[in-house]
Length: 454
Ligand SMILES: Cc1cc2nc3c(=O)[nH]c(=O)nc-3n(C[C@H](O)[C@H](O)[C@H](O)COP(=O)(O)OP(=O)(O)OC[C@H]3O[C@@H](n4cnc5c(N)ncnc54)[C@H](O)[C@@H]3O)c2cc1C
Image 1 (spheres, rainbow, N blue to C red):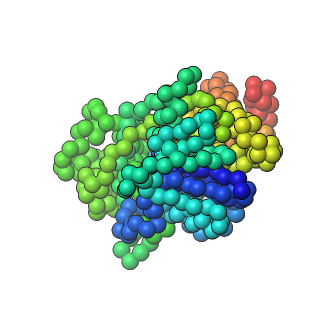
Image 2 (tube, rainbow, N blue to C red):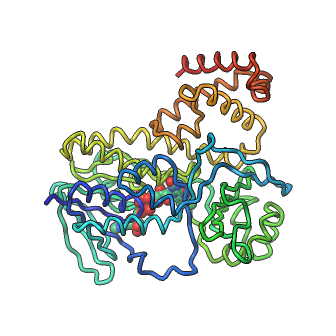
Image 3 (cartoon, rainbow, N blue to C red):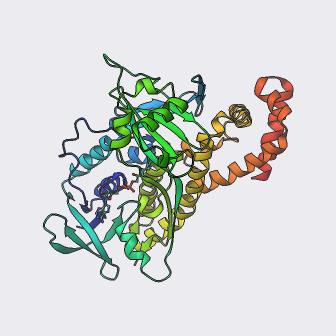
């Protein structure tokens, strides 16, 4: 029986275990941490993620579509909470029926592990971390984290899905001609929570992603099935408005009262959450090659960690799995050829979504409340409605299609420069009266011109 080794049982590693099990491999997954399903997480924080089409496509390929739909809360658009306490209208993410899904990170990870384990030849080895890789032997050096016993294992193919600070990538960094970069944002983040309403139910609209944009910082909230919301504050570590200046209970309370007054009454645990939770950093990592020797490949955050502002980190990691699986079929599991095709296909797209994710931070914390930004979004919506196949707004390309990320980035650059030239008056006309003959003719011309520039 052919053997696959996977290092890291996070979201991407657990999904990759399922893909390899379906190919009939004996799969061994080595995870540094204990089995999360056996830890008593009751009363713990519920961290959620936005799952969208690329991730769903991969989950569908392993037969998990219906299980996922029962765990997810649809979010149809953004609800913007202004500084004066008013809430703007819903800014839809796409057309009717297009939405992203709020899903529990732990719940999804557990589901993937449990589904993978249903295959007779899949084994998860917890409390076991990888220390090093031998590319000539296709061998991994592992250590039991409790007994410190070390051992090696070999396989026909090895996938390193050990996250943004990948130990396998660490081994690769030490070799010749390996490109690596990491870039930290000046911002960190803090997870906070809004509990369910007394007697049950949600304290805010559940089918939306809530944003409190405040230019250099922002708060967001995503719903959970139990009626609570997980909130994330993104704020600079240093400077006038920063984590550095939120050191006392009084400072935290004053900061929230000044900038997020409407949410304070909904957060009875604000101070405890704020001081109890860590303040992690936000990093983008890039590297190349992703393949070591010819049978060891990086996937997910180990290959391309990105900042979370497009909600695409997990989705792009899941897309790594589905693209790799398609290539494995196409190339008859000739792993050296498959892995080489995989890295060349995925690398430009990983770079593309990395850039878009950083750009979306500016959009979320600042531009969502900007009139020109909103005007452009409205015009784009009308262009898409009139020419659904020919004009896709950026968010639609990234979130509701599987167009390569690099192509989505390239097209969005064409869009942005086009709208700067288009003239605000004409855009206002189209936005306000999209069904008038003059607007329709203009939109037809615009789409033709944009296509010419692609
Ligand atoms: C605040 C925040 C919000 C986010 N929101 C979204 C979102 O809305 N949508 C989205 O798509 N993405 C989101 N992401 C990104 C997403 O969390 C990651 O892209 C995703 O978790 C990557 O999965 P992974 O399996 O590659 O890595 P991880 O989830 O990090 O898993 C890696 C696993 O490897 C294990 N491991 C590490 N080292 C070793 C070792 N030496 N040996 C064995 N095991 C090891 C770890 O314990 C872990 O279980 C967000 C990220 C952050 C930080």
